[in-house]
Image (cartoon, rainbow, N blue to C red; front, side, top):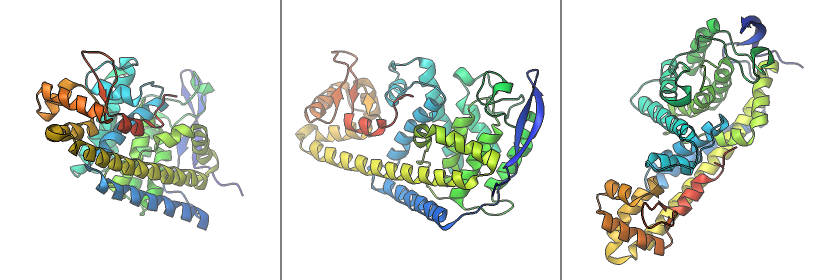
Length: 385
């Protein structure tokens, strides 16, 4: 039996053309969750629990968050068309020249700043709200290509998705006068009004609703994907936003787009929930495996460092710094650890001989050192589209 659509179309004029724009119904919809879908959602929650626990075994509880925020920044920005890799971002952060246009890597760096802002605000007790989403958007587009797209404010002109003009668009979001009311309804839903919604389902439904409203002139995809993790943190499913679904969405992007449209046209929320549960489960399991691999790598290299003799204490300091900055220079490491450059040079020589780091420029000056195995682990899946 055909399900009702998740909203309605209205005619609106934009750019001298008359188009059909979609107005989503307020959340939550009526859902039909059968035993199979319930099992998939439960398995996703179990995987999230494992991920949350895995951070305990890392050499530093902040490590997974630090590296995954940067990986997510790269992946989420790639979906929007940038060509920056994780290595490009890490080079940019230590003020070294990346291998892509600065505009691309700067855009990725803004995403890191936006995520950090959202995390800091929520840790201070600020609620997940439209105000927070606008703040995150403001940080995201504060500089670079999106800075002229009204950062931090809901749009005041019509936008569309796909196509060179509105009449050729794949989808036209609500007209301007509907944006504020639709986002107000979404905020109520995030706060469990009119009724409580299980957290994983809430995150899934809210993402679709946000993408459908498309409340900003630019940056909607990045903010909408980040919102998933923020919902799970707000509801205390995760202590930190270490679950990012951009890699899964990137690898299944056509299915992702098709399912969003199926919700709007056919009200197929259950099909979307199946996809979302699978995305969460597989992504959380991959993150947990990465955390375990990182923990084992760090411990193995610590044992190697203990065998370095008199330089072992200094090498341990450098190794701790490498966990957070797996691409670095002698000068930067010296400043971060407080060790003199000559000592850092000796440490890097010892770590290179031990197979822990490698020098990647082949130069005698301005050398770059990579914690290769950690960088390779985090780099998985980040090749530009």
